[in-house]
Length: 293
Image (cartoon, rainbow, N blue to C red; front, side, top):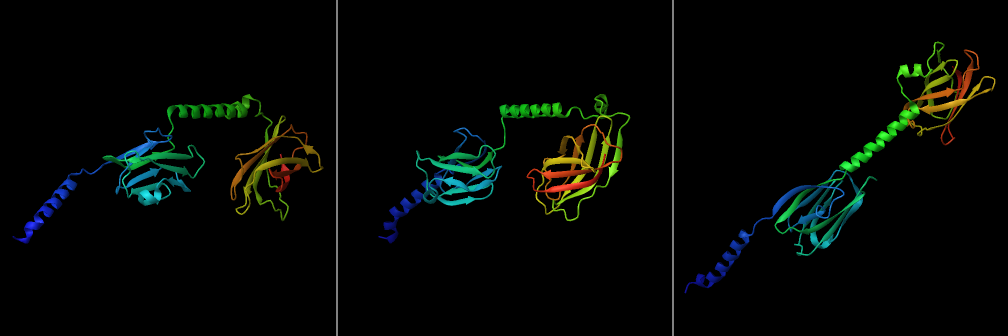
């Protein structure tokens, strides 16, 4: 009897097994997006052995901010990048098995973290999941809009209408207004790191205003306006009603406009004053002499 007869049953078994394996359908690969905070259903991610699942995020992940259950026992590949997480299981999850995946984000915006539940694919695999963190629902947008509107109303109440005709109607601009440019002097060796780029003074019978263009040195620390003092050449103090800069602070190398409003003028035209500026911490003093307004 030929030898191949003895091999015939084994060959038939192998061919049958191969045909059965070829008949197993490949998993259906899905691509979807998840908006945080996610519902329990949306936070479920289907994975399968040997198939890549990639999660992309619209915010950077925190360093060491990924916690994956079964990382060593269930996955042959885990790649963590700034905004991407790639998973490739090496074993098939049991039908009732669940693995928790928690990611934390680098910034302090909400939500600061998200948790996903990895489950067996059972014919469908989430090959690509786009995680959207910064989208807002209608209620959140309406609340944000209400906040902005309230802030704008408060700003209007504090600053009033900024159009020139409103200033006239309010009595700020009168026929006796005078403007004077001046070149104030900074003492040699001043260590404040600030420079004076120019100055102007304005006055009427009712009010006076000093406007100074300041520049913070490129190597200096951030500067925030604190205390302001004005004195005449004879040492008489001038009452300061308001003082502000056109920005919250001056960063290194940044310029800003300082506005100081005082009481109604009692001094003579052309009289020179000394303007002293201190930062909020009180450690950086900028004295300016020769201020005219």
